[in-house]
Every structure is written in structure tokens, then in C-alpha cells.
Image (cartoon, rainbow, N blue to C red; front, side, top):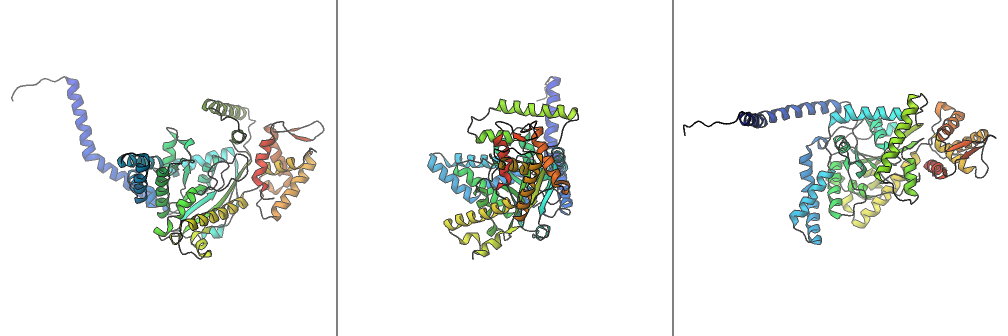
Length: 468
């Protein structure tokens, strides 16, 4: 027992380092975590004094805790047992699948990243690319929304810039939680997206267990009053028209309120752009052509960035026109239920719930459609297409656009007229199309759509066709 044992110096140093790490983990780490957690809570409390729609405790609950709550929700447990029976697997394996789905879905909201980094980046990016304008806003009705409501912004989906633009415009009032598609599940990007409070969904998932896990998370977020933003169409429009309503997320939201004792308020939002960054890719997808490979998409993106960088360096770069957002009259779920003589969601049977969801989805989509702003490029696109086989010159184009504006205003649509000058509206709309060589001007002054670009012009015209 008293013998001397010789050890290599490197082994002694390694053992000492490991012992020090263990000591820090046991003694110091809990204190540091507590200190950082307290500072984070103070920061959130300070933010909540400035926000109209507060950051709810559920949004800042540890991700591991929320994952456990979702994975062990009674509905999820029942779905896991059913899945195990159908697939002939042990229940434990199905439970592991449910937990994996929960980890995939549940965000990890970080207020610092959202407000100090995310919103500033969104503001810079939005204003660098577009001239951002607020269209119609029912200010009094929006201000009257009860602070304890579960607020859900419901929007049309024109571009992946929708996330960026809405985050920027809403940052003074609230933090938004989005449902984001699988396209954004890239190594670094998905970490930032989760930290901003967004959650990932598989848009066309047929797996019943997955859908039950997703429903459980959305229901918990709604019950807890987390401010959410959803795209009623469930995906980007490929032809510029509004797509049919997808009812999945909406039905999950509707199933929550009776458990929470608070109203759910839907705020319709209409978005439009003079230029959608993905417009050509969306049209290709709608044409039935084979989807492009990742390499082709990467090459196209790099070429686009390189071209715009060269224009910027040469001082010939223009922003991509206007981006405009309109906020409509809030729709109270409790009031919508009362209109139909129903006290709460649970009082209806399954068929009645489905019918109610369809009615509400249709109502919200109608409201969203009416809010979409008419911007210069869309107006010029409609006028060019309506001219048919008689290409207009600039003067006749202005007359056509002027008549369109009168019709839209008569129909109650919001038209953004830059500088309150209708002639300038045509000038900037036409400039966006000629810079991209989508429209050319002949020697005789007539304006022609470039061969093959008719679907692209129709894409922008379709954004406001339903308003005419």
C-alpha cells in the first residue's frame, strides 16, 4: 500500500483537467445556468413592457421540457399505441418515433437572437431589397384585441421573404412563431430558425403519428397564448393566384381554446411584391417540367447574386420595387362560434368541426384576398395582358392602368400609388419589367412581352385578378 507508483506527466495533466471539468460541472455550471436564466428572464420582462402582444412563458420554457410534454401528451401516447399495432412494432419504438418527431418540431426560442439579431437582420434585408410600405391597417380594431388573447396572423404566401418581411413589420408589437417547411432544415440555418421561435413541419406528411405530434405542439402553443403566423395556402403560389385553403394547422389551433379559457383572434394579412425572388422557379414548378437538381438551384442562386453584385458595384443596381403588407379586421373565434349558435369547439361532433373549420378557413381566406395590395408591377402586368393582340404604347398603357386603379378603388381594394402620382406608378412598374427584359419597347413605341415570358407576366397579374 505504501509503494510509489510512477505515472507519465501527460496522464497526470489529463486526469487533472478531467477532474477540474467534473468539478466545474458539479459546482459551477448550475450557478451559471441560474445566473444566465435570471438575466434572460429580466430581458424578456423588459421586452414585454414594450410589446403589445407579450412573450408567453411557454415560449421561453426549456426545449427539453416542451419536447417531453408533447411526446407524452395523451393524444400522442394513444397515437403511438395505434401506430405500433398497425406497423407491428413494439410500443417503445413508436414512442421513440414520437419523441423524434417532437424534437424535430419544437423550437428553441431565444429572445436575444430574435430581437437583437433576427429583427435587425430582417429590417436590413427587407429595406435593402424593397421599398417597404404599409398598406391598409385597421388600427383601432387591432389595438382593441385583448392582450391575453391567442393571436394568429393568417397570410397569403407569395415568397420566402414573407417570413422576413412580417418579422420586421411585427417586431415592434410581438415575436412571431412560424411554421417553416423542410426547405430550411440546413445545418446552421435550422438552428437560427429554431432560436427565432419557428417550428419545422413536413407539409405533405401522411404519417398519422407525426400529425398527432404536430397537433399536440400547436395546441399547446395556442393554449399558452403564443403569437403565431400561418400561411392559409400551406405553400407558395406557383401561378400567382391564391391557392385553396389548407385546413391542417387551422384545425389544430381551433382544438385548443376551450382548454385555456382565452379567446383566439385571427388577424388577416395580405402581402404583395413588385418582384418575387423565386418567381421563375415557381413558374417552372407549375409548368410540369422536371424539378431542378440542388446543383442547378445553387448555380442559379450564385449567378443571381453575382449579377446583382456587379450591378451594385457599377452603381446601376435598383431595389426590386415595392413590398406592401395590409392588416385587416381581427376575427374572434368566440364571436364566430356565437354566430353559429355554438358555445365552444368541443360541443360539436367531428363532422360539424370539419364543416366549421372549412367555413372559418374560407372566411379568413376571403379577408386575406381582399387585403392584398395592388402594386405597380401587378397593375402594369394586367394592363399588358388585357391589351391582347394590340400592344399598347406608354400613353395607352397609362390610360389602361388608370382605369384599373379606378375599378380597384371602387371594389374596395387598396392600391399603392407611389408619390400619389398615377403616371409615376406606371413608370416604376414598367421599369421593373424592362430592366428584367420581360417587356421590350419596339422602335414604334409599342410595348411587347418577351417571347416565353407570358407566364411570368401572368404570375404578377394573377396576384390582383381576384380584386377586379
